[in-house]
Image (cartoon, rainbow, N blue to C red; front, side, top):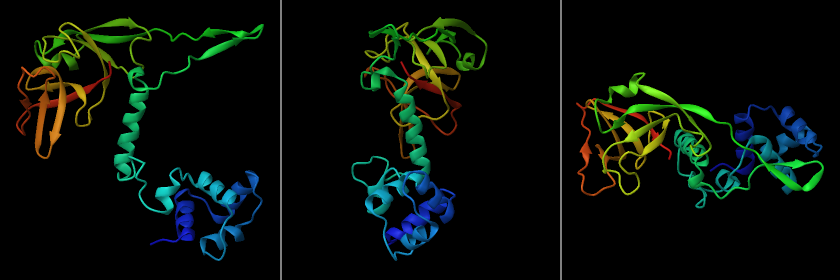
Length: 246
């Protein structure tokens, strides 16, 4: 098991810093030391004081001190993931932060009126254009998702910033969450997590379904229990077009 000095040395090297560079950064942040101190800490000849230790963690990018120096942090859901898993989880967190349904009610960004400190002006989000596909999912051939069969429509802040395109749904397989004729907005990606609702191409048709992956099983599930799962096999022509974000 690594001791504190060995851990500090490893993180310094991962940060691409020499002992001299690390000491200079410490000094720039208000803790005047030289590289001999860094060397002594890494050899466990001496130890940094609490303030110096926290500055080192900041410089080396150590954000979870518990996991770095003790054991996997039971309060950190990322602690049991490898680097690739952490990267994927953080990507998904960024997407969730773009969807107002999943964030703490935010204080609106305001601009202060210099003539009136008590007044505020709400910053409005600019409108933008997104493609809205003309054929609904679950109706007609799914190849239209690779074509130019769409209209550009103007949308406002009611559509998540992460949305790449819109598509209208056909049928009641995703009720009560989504209803027949509803437009859903989709973030274009070819990778989804188990349980994500997405837009899929399967053997010539487009679907809005929930992805279910378990061992070697891959299925597209409806929310409406009246509809049976759709199995995806090795011989299926299957593609993921995106994650539904609204």
